[in-house]
Image (cartoon, rainbow, N blue to C red; front, side, top):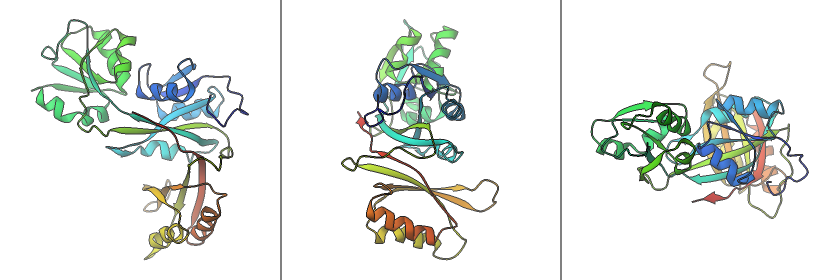
Length: 289
């Protein structure tokens, strides 16, 4: 159980996108423990819907990768209402080439995986000669595909944790191009407001803002946080649904809305924004290497 949320009745499974053996399932285990019941979902939207309708006690979804940047769909879904972020966890993404028992690196002619995973080990795949790449929904789905086809020329890129459930073996480990490949996952639950966050632990607050098309608008928004001494961890621009050529700025900042510097920054930011909304706050998560 997540520390700090004992008042919540955790009696259902934890939802994640993908199949058993996916990195999202591994993130669930890191947060909720190895014995936590899980609910695999076909899409990020399905994870949010399962949590919103009470079919899952919580959900775990990726929000940012150190190589490919933010996962925009997750941030967009956080604005759909009824869901709040309550925690996070960061995983070191170690990718492997998996194959059937008896298969070798030389026997592999086709490699299946999630498109970003294939991109994250591009140099290794290029070094293997003329490989055919087959994109699928997630890394664990690729492992299941290898099991189902039972073809020694078919391999997949996935985490080590995906080998055992599908009867595969690790042909090569650590094939990612960047050794600093991390993915940050959010823990989400049903609600309109994140639970209180301990003042004694480092925390993050997620915001969304919309600005007028005027010179200096973004400068004034960012200046509100700079003048209050609030650190801006990240900023991402997304098109505003139903408003052509208008954008939403997603911001992650250090601190909680109740902290005096953050409160001052939010007050100033609201004065220069068309829209300013606090998406949620949570304790900074652990990084698992």
